[in-house]
Length: 224
Image (tube, rainbow, N blue to C red; front, top):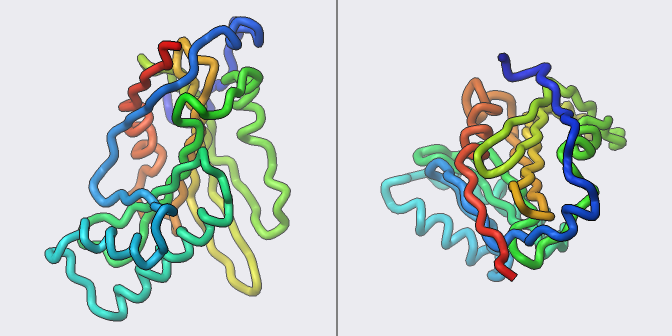
């Protein structure tokens, strides 16, 4: 079956009371490609930039103009993440080896035993909420497709959007893939969102790139 047009609902999900009795998520891991850097709000932005450039290494050479543009992109992501004031969220950026621009940002929320409990956010309910129209007048959202994957570790509800922005005379289009991951045997879920600054910035099949990451997810549940 193709990527899009797949049904995202399913009957027979656990009740609110049943899910309340399940353990929380203690830890989660998944495979990522080279070039991902977590945004570290525990240090000042300039110190974080130094850490990113140190990891990139001397073999990844940029001229002064390219470096200024890239650092500007990274500073904006850092500032936006800091403004969210969400201690349960993790944000990362992707700058592939040899590239002079950021090609993707990821948002990840719900990891950890102290993460939020969303017993009412079942895969069915989440699928309905995921494709609701955006209320922001500055953006027109095209829902390209939504689908549901049953992986060994859990159920992943996903939607792929094209985000058409217009703000202050500027117009641009971004790709976004949003996922709600429901690990089997847990009362919690994890939210993921992957956004590109331009269509095609991460190749011709951005949803497949994200799906491969979701397929690699492993989860450790709280024993308490």
